[in-house]
Image 1: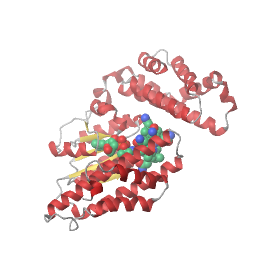
Image 2: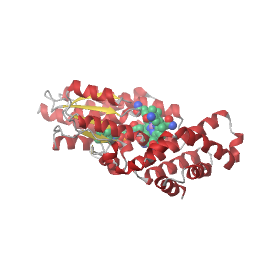
Image 3: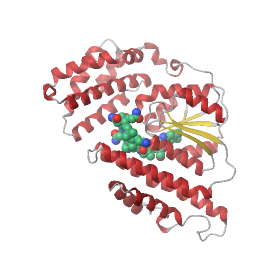
Image 4: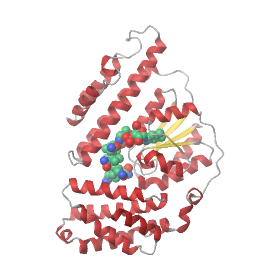
Length: 364
Ligand code: B12
């Protein structure tokens, strides 16, 4: 391992990667990653024991994935949220992170174990575009000795289940970043478990400390290293879960408030838009583009409301409203424009106690 890979010494490479990503310089970013791993390659290290050298390269690869690429990617997200970089720059930066993860995968091939511990499948839930977190999880598991079938972004549940049977996988690792996809994630978890395959969920959609994964009776790990440790501790054994309707895990769904909000979303959005126009007169001057974004925002608000009802957690909705307010403020749009939308939904849904409580909590 190079000096630059010694404990606590990734601060400088992290800054160098951030600069390369900011400059859109893919070659410089990949060269940095290669350089960090180069001297850890078996045969080029001082250690005479080749298995120790391979272990060192695997550990170096994992650190580059989790302590260099992942935090850089998170920093990109913060810069976008603060309106410091454009959507196009964020896309370019993600493409560079993907190249860097691929460079780690290539450089560590000579260090992989001959006999894998078992076979696992890593995929994003249906509708989920954030594939890089799943890619990082897949690469770390590969370095930890698993054969990994990586399916990438937005995998429809029926195809996930078919592939799971086809590959006779021992565990399914599901990734999701966007909470509104949780009802679909629940369906995927339930479908895999009903076929006797354990599910390990992760990603920010599953909430603080994986609280929504636990509601859906899936295992949860905070990050890729946690997932690898969990798989090592309790080698994935087929479970005997019967197929369950969502309301078995989530008895609060019996009140039908989630189904009602989910089903009537188009009408709720239409009325809320009309009410926002009345309550926020500045909107009358909006361009077609600004109006489209507003419709999109209201659509998201109703989707997050439905999701908060699904998992019965007002914090999920309040967190989303706070996040949206910050995004709007960073772009010079007054956050108070959200209030007429919340008032409209409160008025439209006043007969539904759980929904009203969630909206009232977010209104503050
Ligand atoms: C890159 C990016 C995108 C790219 C994704 C490209 C790709 N190929 O991955 C694109 C442009 C497609 C995108 C789209 C959108 N995005 Co986006 N995106 C991001 C960004 C900047 C980085 C994501 C990332 O890679 N993070 C780095 C990884 C390493 O961190 P992580 O996700 O937390 O993953 C770690 C753990 O959570 C865990 N983990 C993750 N999965 C799993 C799985 C298992 C099994 C386990 C055990 C662990 C685990 O391990 C990982 C490694 O340690 C984040 C900001 C951020 N801070 O993350 C926003 C972010 C996730 N996006 C966001 C949003 C809103 C969107 C859009 C809705 C935007 C829009 N209006 O269209 C769409 C949604 C598209 C969709 N349907 O999925 C929001 C979500 C906010 C929220 N509360 O819902 C974020 C947080 C941005 C922000 N700062 O607000 N996005």
